[in-house]
Image 1 (cartoon, rainbow, N blue to C red):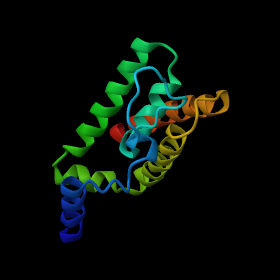
Image 2: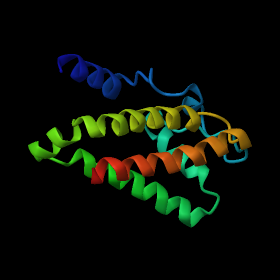
Image 3: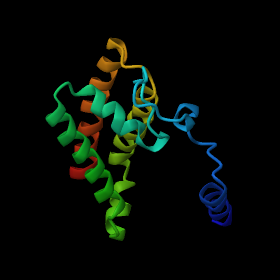
Length: 137
């Protein structure tokens, strides 16, 4: 815990951007559009989900629901819910949920090519399916 606070202090007060992409430190130019917009690492999964949906309005709704669902999972404070999540029935779903989450992180950092977009579409469906399986089992 002390290490986390020290890293937070260094990051906020001295501007050490070791977790950031180098393109995010470049000065913005209004006349040039970058080829690839790189979000911060903690938004890569949501960025992959957003790239997977071709419609802007539907993409925004899917992005918003993914953030809200993860927020609601973080706000669960009932001890029986935590013990229920760690049952043997849910172990498979939770493992694949984290695997799909990590895969979405990787795809979010890639260029928006057709191969990665199709992977993102499959992983988005997998992401929501596993969230439903974890919630209702």
